Image (tube, rainbow, N blue to C red; front, side, top):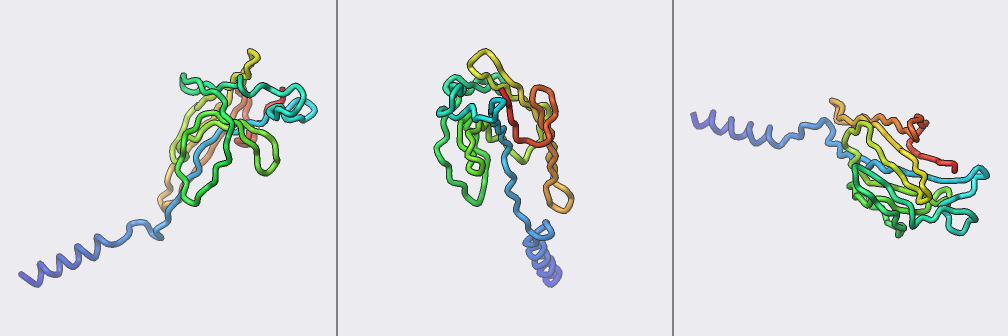
Length: 167
């Protein structure tokens, strides 16, 4: 009886220490961020205050789930290796690759599904634009994430999630 108990105890300890995931993957899922670039017909950056006829960014607001968010200027934020979503509302920042000014709204949890998630940007001149997205997120049986998204600007489907508005 003692041998059976000892064998059972060793098996229990041994099996409880096993990892159930096949290769022990750890995933950092990128958060969802609405990213908007605004230009005129000639391609001039209307969020750059140095350009003629630029939009007064202090008057730009975003409406999300009944809440209003004013536009803040983005201090440079250093990225770390591990990434958790941090909601900051609406902010004006500079795209490090294209050097264009962009509006960003977020961050929303990337490890979640969304249906008809809507953001309205009010430009401060009485006009507005509506951005909407659908996102399906699920964990596959092998432990990998599966993500699909659809993005819309004023009910017109976009080819990606980067929103470029021409005013």
